Length: 284
Ligand SMILES: [Zn+2]
Image (tube, rainbow, N blue to C red; front, side, top):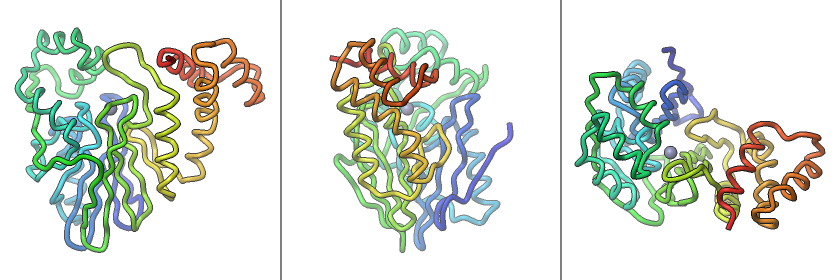
């Protein structure tokens, strides 16, 4: 597997997302006194890969780790870092429960049945860990609610709980001096415990929050970093869709008709059409 790393801004090195096993973006934010790591990685192997690159580039090893939310691909590499972990109270609660479980095929099947994780996650976990799977889920050390500012020395980061459809514990991380906003998966649809869905209210509120930071760069965990301008252009059809879903609820035909008219398109692209399904699933 080829790994890609990028110096995104003066203080931030990222490891790009890898889609084969659903590995999200990892980031090291290096201040004058401390290095903060954003997300732990999907596994010790994922964590080791980023650590090796930090060493190779002479980046100070992480002193602290923050989690954007509890999902396995962001958190299961936690124990490989051996640093204090900062997380939202809800993130810690879920990981505390998962840390007492085993990860045999049967036990993972139980979690799928309970709607805690999805079959897709199980398939990715199998790929990430291989057959001789040894999973040890860590528990965060420092818990917060609301928001928290972390001073790294000449660089400060704001960690803010935003919630939303994807996961109730979703947080975003804003690196003030570099004007980079890490969104985690906050803008994604719900993925566990039912069909994928979006609520128009939550989606529009999250967009407002994201734009409110005035970031130069925005990074979604399973995407590529985007400039503020590119991000707005990318999200514009989705914002229109959310507003139409807000106005017309589960009237799918009306939403489709209005969206095609607004975008001046005869047919919607596949991803947006899927988005319509997500909003219909989340309509009240
Ligand atoms: Zn997630």
